Image (cartoon, rainbow, N blue to C red; front, side, top):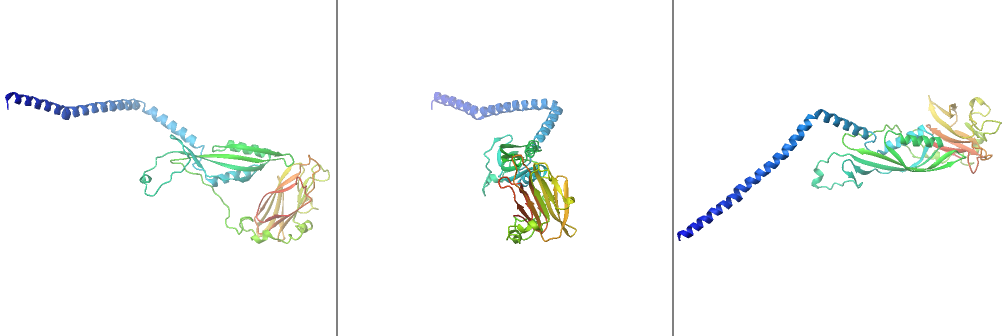
Length: 380
């Protein structure tokens, strides 16, 4: 090999060594240095930010506490879930407090519609498939918003409806009435209609659902005839008064109820009495309006009693018979200004059946109606 060839080879070898050194030694080191410089810049910016925040530590902690308090204050307007038992007790409380009755309520399932910090949801629940690896992952803490709507049919007085709307608007938890229809009956002086009540809830970390304390006796022979102590189902279906449609009650009763025109000068328009000849047993009304009458049949100290009340008037009598009979002597309405009527609530907590006989009531606008009843109660 010529010396010139050797020199060429040596030159090429030197160039190859330089290229290899650049590619495999200098370039990686340079990239590492660039990466370190970039990381240093990022860390320096982070350091400067933390230093700035450290100088504002007291202020930032105070603002964080303030924001957390505001968040908790907003959460307090919403329950942790939409428990149907809680909703039932809410509606029951309304009826006990105001002259307003829920004739029917449709209970629907809550739907998720929003996740705080993430946005709207599809409302679909996540389904976990057995063997799915993602099912073992811890779920992120999040606050999920739910809503449920309850279609309701109602009956109430005008004042009762106003009180109901105010109650919903000022309730401790946020809810609203989505739709409402109102029909006013000038004779009964009542409002009837339907509405849709929307309720909302937010579930999430450290949120505890409300609980309800329901003290209701369970276990009856027939859910349609009352609770503990009520007579068997057969007693509610047939009785000794069935043969003449309760006509025997007209001449033999425990309580009498007279319903007439309030404008009559002879007597009060509504009279309830245990003895027609004894005015000491009377409770009455001459308001020319729909009046609430409460009749209670109960046991105390081994004896059975019946009591009746209108407003702050009441009377109690011992029951010495094997049933409680109420004779209702009504009458036709005189004109459109004759608005006298009764809405009767019957509470029977004994084994005695209660029978009503209603006679001569107005056929088009009855003066007598049973608003609610418990225990064995039958109307002829």
